[in-house]
Length: 124
Image 1 (cartoon, rainbow, N blue to C red):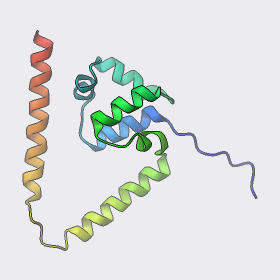
Image 2 (cartoon, rainbow, N blue to C red; image 1 turned 30 degrees about the horizontal axis):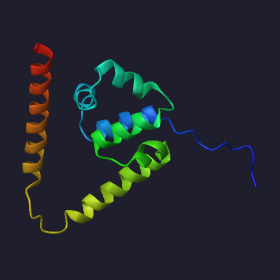
Image 3 (spheres, rainbow, N blue to C red; image 1 turned 135 degrees about the vertical axis):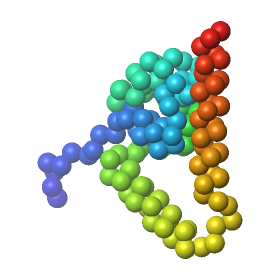
């Protein structure tokens, strides 16, 4: 048994950033959902460990399990992305019941809506 290999530390803030970026969510939009400033979200993303109540709020805003933020490490992220890509490739061999381009348009419209809401909130 090799005892000189330390368990990999999980950086919760970095995990929040990764998940947020994978979901295509800007810091400003997440901040709006959390009721904090964009700089606070940036601070969260720099911290290795966060309070459980903050993790709970962020997980709800991102619609991901708290465990994803607490347990995801570099290796797990790579495996998740590879698994996701494998599933997408196998999914594409089936007849889609939706047009993927429609989903991209929906995401774009959501981003525009989030931006407009942020502008409206900031202008008040």
